[in-house]
Amino acid sequence: MLQYPAGQAPFLWRVEPAPGLHVAFTGVDAGNLAFHVSGTLAGEAARESTAAARHRLEDAMGVERGRTEYLSQVHSARVVPAQGRGWAGGRAPREADALVSATGCDPLAIMVADCLPVVLVSRPAGRDGITGPTAVAHAGRRGLLDGVLENTVHRLRQDGAGAGPGDIQAWIGPAICGRCYEVPEPMRADGAARIPATGSTTSWGTPALDLPAGADSVLTGLGVTVHHSGLCTLEDHSAYSHRREPGRGRSVGLVWQNQP
Image 1 (spheres, rainbow, N blue to C red):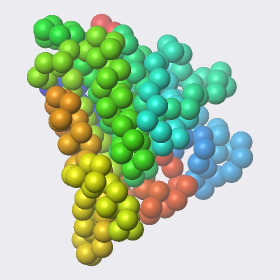
Image 2: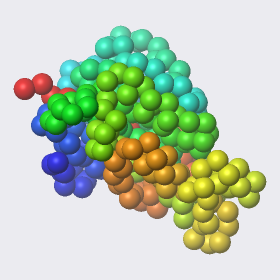
Image 3: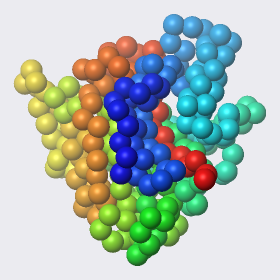
C-alpha cells in the first residue's frame, strides 16, 4: 500500500491501496467544497468559488471535471448507489449519507467538518489485487448510531465485496476526537448504550463522544480492516471544523480510480 506524504496539497492524507485506486481526504488548502456553506463569500461568488475548488481538486485527482459524485447529506443511515454521473450540469444531489459504486470505478466524495468521513474499498472474495465495490460514508453522531456504516458494508457485500479478512478496508479520515467532542450527559449515555466505544470524556473533564472509536468498533465487528488518520479537526487548523468556525467550509473524503 503506497501512502503519500502528509500535507500533499490539496490532500491532508492520501493512500493508494491498490495500483490506480486512491483514497484521500482534503483540508482547508483545497478550499470549501460544499455549495450549502459560503465561507467568507456570498451568493454567486460563493458558488463560483466552490465550483472552482471542486475543479482544482478533480484536476489533482486526475479525473474529468464535474465527474465526482456528491450527496445532499442529512445525518441519516441511508445508502444509495452511484449513478455514474457527477455534480456538473446543475444536477441536484440525492439525499443520503453513504454512496456505493458497485464497479469501483465512480469517483465518490463525502463532505465533513467534524463528523467522520469514512472511505471503504473492497475486493471480490478470494481475488487478491482485484478492485471490488467502493463507498464513502458520512458518520456523524446520528448516522453512526442509526447504522450508516452497517448499511454501507451490507451494500458493499450485496454488490460483490468479499467477506474474508482484509476483503473490505476502511479509512476513517480527519474528524473531531473523543477528547474534544463535548456533549450533554444524556447524549453520551445514549451513545454508549448503543455503541459502548463512543463513551468518552473531554480533556477538561466533561461528557464527550468518541466517534472515531465508535466507528472502529462497528467496522471491526463487521470484519472490516480499519485505518485512522488520527487528526482532530477541532485541534488541527489544517482541517475545517464546524465547532471552531461554523459555516467556513467543508472538506471531503474521496475514493477514485485512474484507469491504466
